[in-house]
Image 1 (spheres, rainbow, N blue to C red):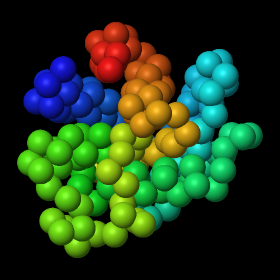
Image 2: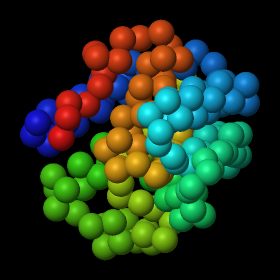
Image 3: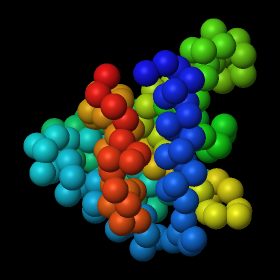
Image 4: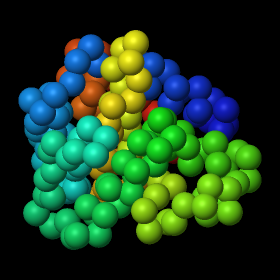
Length: 165
């Protein structure tokens, strides 16, 4: 896929995976779906879900390190700052040949240009929080979030999944 095709798919994902409402119980449900999907594949990751400014769910699977939690936080920061998935933001930066610090004055210690951060968007409202996953290859961090949200919403994952790289 070209950058433009991937950006279009990521935009479709963000459009399809919007919430009517979101609260701590929703975060817990999505977090548990993510854990189940990861465990079923024998994978491990750190999972962080929250509203902007308030973490609602966090789980570091056995075998992860504190660094995975930091990556999840940094990916969520990108989502909450730029109101799009960290994957989409990364591709847009690459497409335009931008760098994070010179362009926005942001430290890579707090913002990660890496897939694995996804917006929690309320229909007719906007971004209210984010989901961050770190521990898999970055593209897979993004993909597992999409799969979990598709399962939560009862949608067919094939319609939203990224093609194999």
